[in-house]
Length: 509
Image (cartoon, rainbow, N blue to C red; front, side, top):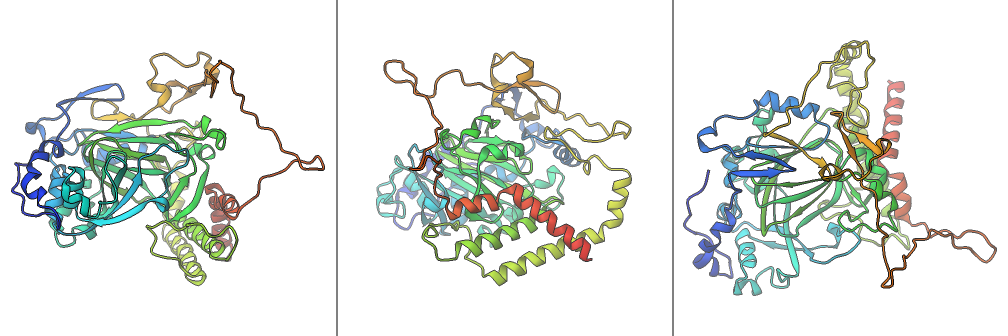
């Protein structure tokens, strides 16, 4: 479905350029992929307009697929008749008119440390002003982006709640049809909008709650994903603090292997998401996302899961600890530790109240479902069974398990580990191979070149020697408050403490 070229009725406060020339960017802003595309080595054809009414999966089938998926995958041909396919940047600029949107601004530079949101600049601008800046309008030199040349900076209107953006245009909520994936009544109201330039990115992190569905509308985005079991390789941190986001200290595109040597063992999954495609990100998968086209527009929605009730206790506990420690005056407590997405710093009493409410809600829900849980214990369902690190069901051989073969093919493409994409195996020893959940082998890439070679070919060795003090003892680096928090708030530690709190409450009840 394509829009006919509209008549421009809105313009920047400082720019008549858009009124005169906005039509010239129409081909760029509405460009769609060709009818034949490829993804991770799979070739497929887009559904034609005559087939728009036909979906490759019924809603209940799509939901069942996601329940059994334990690695990221891309759905194709599920959104061809969604009105949201026409949410190009220009279309959104017309809809939002003079409504200001907050943009995050980042410097285009190569550095080994992640660029967290606390280190970015921010401007308020309309989407039309954003368009002027992207087109190099003379008026952009006096607008909100005046201090940020496009050649040196990227901009990202990220994590914008659609329910707030379009609160006076609620009919647009129906343009995003998540009910096609088996979630009746779920639409744009429960979604967030992301609009950015080439290079705009989200630091590598995992989401504490739910799984993630991402609908790519315009331009392409490159996703770097890492499985939950690789948490020890990702160096998790809660600084900067944002509820439900666990950041990685590693810049996954340019990792500092001296500081983060375990990252060598991380299993990288890559995919470039094209317009019209929907990416499914399972629970707790780490991800770094970067825009690779001049304009990108996407919409995502987090799908709640039953285990989120326990995760909310962990998040409340995390917030209580970090606020209690980081608000205390200290020599090394002067950093910008609170993410700009947070409203402010809650008091200790408020955090304790939130923690108690989270525990109470969890216990009440478990009490209401105790009878159902008892039946599940006698005869577990596939969705309730425990799984191993590869996603395989962990059940005794004597218990029958309903088999379900994931329908990978032209409409469902698995996101591959980077070793899967090699034409030749990196190693040939089967002991070095990993077995995926569908029992296929893939090999991890081994480094065969030195990390650095001097001009004359002399290899520079990376030494991990201990410094010694004057008495011959080993010297340790200074431990900071944030180092302590990285240990206390490690996801594994928080999960353990959460379970201890729940067990204690069960005893008291």
